[in-house]
Amino acid sequence: MDNADLSSAVLARKNGSSVNASGEHSGPAPLRGAGLMQGKRGLIMGVANDHSIAWGIAKTLHAHGAALAFTYQGNALGKRVSPLAASLGSHILEPCDVEDAASVDALFARIGEEWGGLDFVVHAIAFSDKNELKGRYADTTRENFTRTMLISCFSFTEIARRAAKLMGRGGSLLTLTYDGSNRVMPNYNVMGVAKAALEASVRYLAADFGPVGIRVNAISAGPVRTLAGAGITDARLMFNFQKRHAPLRRSVSIEEIGNAGLYLISDLSSGVTGEIHYVDSGYNIVSMPHPEALKTVDAAEAAAESSSEPTG
Image (tube, rainbow, N blue to C red; front, side, top):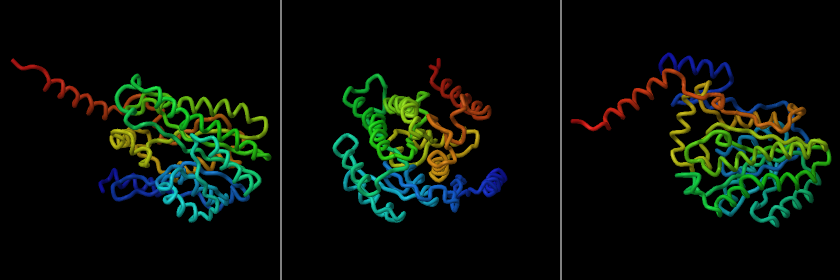
């Protein structure tokens, strides 16, 4: 570890985070002990494994006293999610296919029967044919566009409508988005369009449900090594680029995203609704890499152009 790495490690310890053997920041541990969610009950949708952003949020909410219900789609994911749910003391684990309205109805009927009410929902569901995330957005098929929008965007509206009926004392709805909604990202295509629509949905739902005390927000997280992220071509390259060029010069952890989720779901953010909250080490404010990186890129591109010029 050189002096720069040592400085990063010291700073990380001061901030409550840690640095692993490769020099990556793991972020702080989930906030604990305050009991901010004591007596609250909520639904977590979209956990795939213990690397999922939804899992980072679930752990933090549980650490603050929340009772949690989980969903899964398909037996394979059910086998992964079941032990995770059990580890947080959850006894509600329900299948849910958001493409099937009857499945969504059955989920909320079960929650209503079990709890009688609901305080929050975390929606971390998105899908698109990974083959159509490559190439041109203009070549997106009608079928994949429709399915991507249904699963990744409309499902939040449908879930919000059902959840609101169980939120007699107000509540919080939280979804996950990504900066590909605002800026063109490689190999993101129709998913960026779906995330843009999802963010618009957050604002409209916030306006609809605000009068009955239900807040609606989204977290726009930086790249995280998740099962969903692995489906994006060259995800590792983009992960490393953003890590190097974000103002904090590091990636974010699911624990850091979980802490932001706690803020947006708990009464800490009681006056906040309709917001897109970035947890990305500040990358969303950057329009170009820092000067030293620009020099490196410029030199590499100049060398490539020179080598491609015909000789003689």
